[in-house]
Amino acid sequence: MLYRIVHKAVGGINESDISLANTSGSFVIGFNVRAVRGLDEAAEKQGVLVKYFS
Image (cartoon, rainbow, N blue to C red; front, top):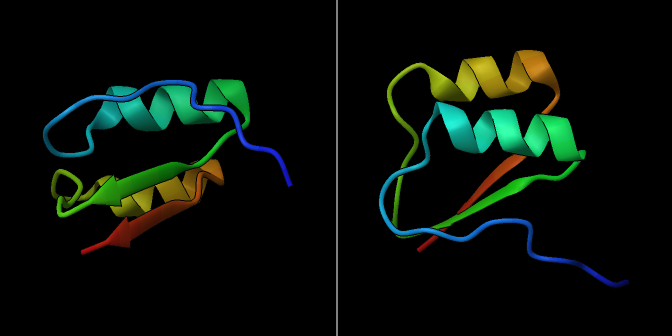
């Protein structure tokens, strides 16, 4: 399986990350971070998969 990185940044997962993933048909991976409060529910409504790793 081949993956392409659409965007990378430091800091917590925010609304623009979810929006970009939704627009590009991709998913969000976070390392040692969490999403802004309430954003997990918004991502789920938009069908965006968010995975967290420590």
